Length: 219
Image (cartoon, rainbow, N blue to C red; front, side, top):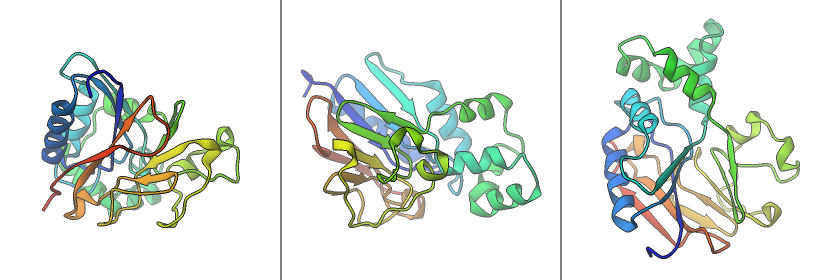
């Protein structure tokens, strides 16, 4: 596999640092370099959101790797929590309490700025990487975070997606990672006792993943 270029799309981590480290080790054992796309929801619910954020902010530890991190709806809720009591309450009741505990009650400004600047979408020649999904009835360039971070797709649905393959997380299921036609969901519910999953794509080949890598989930 070393003669080609590969992208590894990692599903929702939700503070599961131990599982993230195990998955990264698996990824690095496959090839000497490539691209890792984290599909968002790094934080909330799990035991070490701060550790996950710091690990990913630190970037790859080996040469030949590129990391891209997308924003998830939980990063969006965390950032919105600073706006008012209602937003804070929504975040805390959706896993924010565990995140605050991991930070000792105060999230550094540098982390907030980093999360705020995360993109919501990565599009390449063959694929669309996004946290929640896309609405193919609307031009892709017109879709905002209300869709890209929050949409729910029927688990058996596949669209045409402008001739590309969509890879996303956001909607957990023990049936994931799963490919249905032109769409792959890699949220296997790691923080709920499922697996932390990653889809492996050949950058030179159109279509779905050529493999999956998984670790045991948090329990």
